[in-house]
Amino acid sequence: MIPPLIVRRARELGLKILGVTDHHCVENVRAVQEVAEHHGITVLPGMEVQTREEVHIVCLFDDLEQALGWQEMIWSHLPALPNREEFFGAQYVVDSTGDYIRTNERLLQTSTDLSFEEVLALVAERGGLAIPAHVDRSRCSLFANLGMIPLGVKLDGVEISRNISPGEALQKFPALKGLGLVQSGDAHRLEEMTNCTRLRVEHLTVAELGWALRGENGRSVEVIGQR
Amino acid sequence: MTVKEILEVLSLKVLAGANLLDKQVTGGYASDMLSLVMAGAKAGNIWLTMQGHPNVAAVASLLNLAAVVVTESSPVDPLTLQRAEENGLPVLTTPLDTFSTAARMAALGIRGTRD
Image (cartoon, rainbow over all chains, first blue to last red; front, side, top):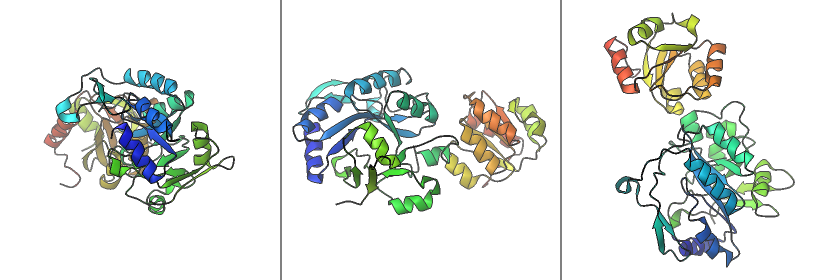
């Protein structure tokens, strides 16, 4: 998953927008942006956050500055422990060609001490977009770990995994009715990248994505199946 | 065996539902994944979890559980306790981990739901 190959795959799939959302880290976003820029593909900086209930939330921002500030805050909510490469793999920071720059030694494959609601509120405060990830998954998901959408929580939309269709998801989780759905692959490998989510927006910004999820201002989102 | 009898032997602390400790306990269930609890726990069970999220009170009430024990002195959201009081659910806490708590309850004769 080095930047040139990610962008090459994105072009093969006809993607116009990518979210780079590593687990608790934004250090490789810029490298992907540098390659994607040449091909007119927008890369939204972001991060997949793991709440203290072990729920994954995709957090997206408009610019790298916001994302870096977010990273600093998130790191202060992670335990100050070193990574264990033999279990979690090495955490490399690379340049736009994929060449090694350095290793991130911090333990990232763990939970923050922030609750589901706290992460949603913090993202909103910073003008970002929070999308509960792969909500149909049997682990690390809103429905598996919390059983249901918490009372009083207003979601714009959720992500469903590659293993379920929107129809199946609505049947299995009726609470999803009326919420925007995206299916983005949660790609940890090139072959997991997908092109099934069609956005109708005027600009590729977080605000527009929010409108699309909520079906506001003529913006919309639809999961259309792989092409 | 009632919730009160269990909490006295195990020295559990009561955070909510202090007036409802006479409930009979039908068995025990331990899980931190609420979807599994919804599928597996039975009415009258005592539920052990390190989760203090407000949905814990919602799920426990839904299933008519006898009580929830939050283990390892995990943080319990004030909203969880509020919901618990509103729904007549005892919420207890212990500094012990889930396994140790379950082991002690088993020693008192509390059996697992599927055992």
